[in-house]
Length: 382
Ligand SMILES: *Cc1c(COP(=O)(O)O)cnc(C)c1O
Image (cartoon, rainbow, N blue to C red; front, side, top):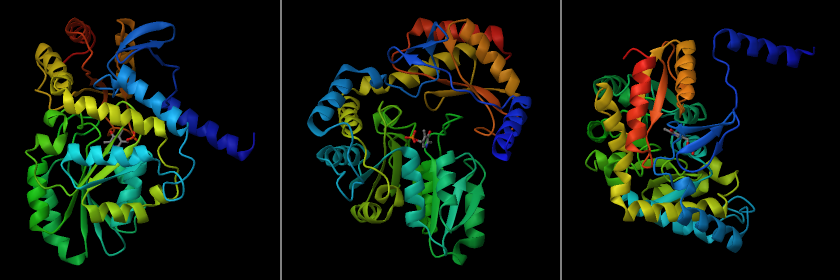
């Protein structure tokens, strides 16, 4: 074996031994709720498709119409030839639903975070980030020459301690947090963080990947926190919106800066017309059907009430089992009972906190949620 294949084989063997190897499973989603895996039809509690809009007739029709009008791809970077008319419409809609002046669409949420952070923070600056923030916010910090410091999860007092000690050392400070934490489902204290950032002249950026469409009347985590000032509101089009793409909502000046300086805008192809068209249709549904946006959280609440779990703050409910092999085994048993609930293992979550992560969607039947709770009760000790 050559050294490259030796390297790969040794890495894989190491991961296998620790129950941390991951494999891609062929998955055919039939609608917003059901999925075919290994010849079996399962009810999925692992999709981020909170409003089941991936399969909504109006969303699919909008994607097809966009392809017919503008083609399958955007043909280039937005700054060259890829800025098709649907991107402008989509940005107006995103800014409106977030109550912000302007928006910039990126190729994905990951590309948004890795573009925004280094465009705002340079060598003389500080990045202050929640320890459980999403991997792509951390990736953004690695692409910036700014100093990075981590504060304990949702611990505003710890963030303040760091700022009191070191704010003066830095030119600008950017504080990064998820609005809804993707693996725990809890929400950031955005009102308290906003006040802290105002007191120390810090720029607050929230990642609302799991908030838009499902909390705050569908407007997301800032709205759910009472609309405190959050000047940088980032998110994805791939979860409740049901498609693909990422965005930042901010002031007109900040958005103009992104469009001329964010490397993931400049050096990556513009979002395809189909994704933009689908997202516009999805946002129309979210704006006009508030009762739909309330459903995923209501399902999570029913599940937690049935099991005596703490009241959920979002449609994401973690059940921590500890060891990766225990999480895999519980996931396997739920699959045997007809439910897809993926095991989440390190390094996605901290060592010792492997878990089942349940994501509830509007289309889950109440009786299936009740059956899931019963099945889980039989499998893990809560
Ligand atoms: C999923 C997710 C992202 C990445 O978004 P994509 O559009 O899937 O790249 C970013 N942040 C958080 C918190 C997420 O959960």
